[in-house]
Length: 190
Image (cartoon, rainbow, N blue to C red; front, side, top):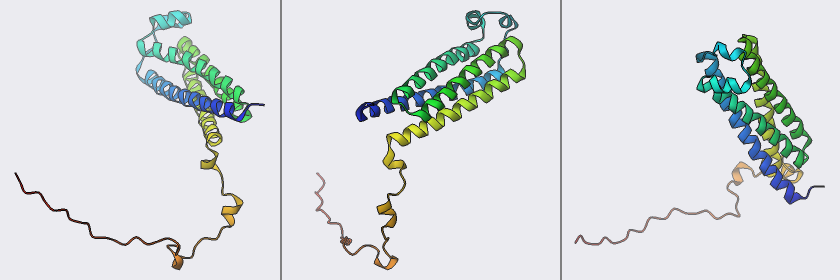
């Protein structure tokens, strides 16, 4: 069983990993949209290997491919951290995110090879799936890290009676009366 302190440290690391992956995924999605609209994939890249594609592709496509690799690494790290924390829901969400990112990467490779819109659409849909999984995971981890912010009312608070309007403010509190500001004497000019 994981100690409470180790779990809190692990949850913080998991949360930061999830945030970093989400930011990179959003950047990747935006860059992919720009590429889809404004950058032409060279015909020479259709038969090239991955390394050759990166070397000969337009700069934006190279950045997109390298960010895709970084995203897969980030998704693996996130899954490992979720396993360390032993949170089943986050493990499932991280695995879904990793699978979606890997599928989007494969769809991107197919798009470079065949240029078909279906490959581009698949890449976008899988990116959206990964975004949804990581947003949910971040919400779940945040709720676990800060339970007092996400908890429902305790039974004691739910049954507590609220003051009537005529008794507001509560009589036990002193009312502060307005006091005129004290004017300090002015110094004569030099």
